[in-house]
Structure formats: structure tokens, C-alpha cells
Length: 107
Image (cartoon, rainbow, N blue to C red):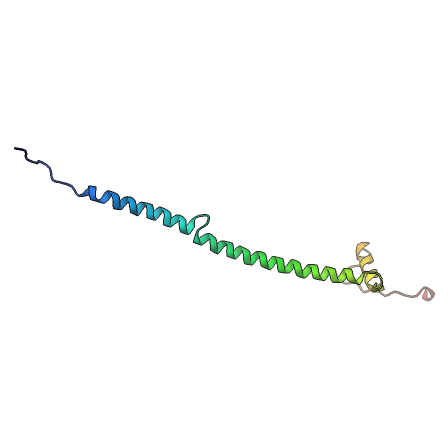
């Protein structure tokens, strides 16, 4: 006749549930913090908003430059605009300087 000298343990019943909890915790963490997770989605949306703002600023700058170039085309060439651009390119005047052109006979 056999008698048991030790008490039966219940730890064997906790192995599979604890492994399942570990796997769920691992995949849950990476679903939130991973490369394609929820947190990354919010970061990408914030980055998209920032880049859209930069794009809008660049488009506005381009429209302004196109308007200024249009003023320099033949037929619509304004002499004041040409003089202003030439003086800026040659560093002859400053931004706050007022230029008064006198006729040649006034000398």
C-alpha cells in the first residue's frame, strides 16, 4: 500500500493562464507603443499637421514669388520694380532707405 507523503500543489494549474497573460501583455504593449501602434498613429497625425502647415507656408511664398516674377515680365515691366530689384541685388540701398531719383538736368 502506498501513501503520499507530500501535499498536491496547485501551481500546475496556473502555468497556462500565466503564459496567456504574458502573451497578451506583450502584444498589448506593442499594439499601443509599437511602430504601427496607436501611439505612433497620433505621432504621425501630429507630424502630418506640422508638415501641412509648412506646405501651406511654402505655397504662399511661391504664390508671392510668382506674382513678383509676373511683374518683371515684358509688357508688364514696372520700372520701379526693376530699380528696386537692381538696387537690392547690387547692395546699393538698404531696406529702410528711400530713394529719390533726380532728373539729369537737376544736377
